Image (cartoon, rainbow, N blue to C red; front, side):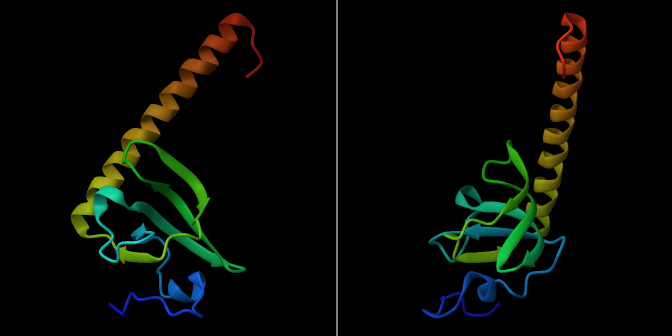
Length: 117
């Protein structure tokens, strides 16, 4: 892994230019070790016009965001370990299932009460 000390003239995009799409990374604003407990976990999607996009991301393994821009204050990143990737994908699956079930309940309740969904 290359030196994680950011040069004064280096942009965020230059910093993370070697990220691979569909890989899980941990990002941190101040700790170069990117500890799992305090990092933003995100599946890298692409870098476009100087903006880094994550397909989905989380900071707590319970609440996920889709299609998020990486905030500019994250200065460090590392590739997730295989066990971190396993845990992330498991938790993402649980979140996705819960989200779909809640949506079904909402649609059912809305239909019952004649609310436009």
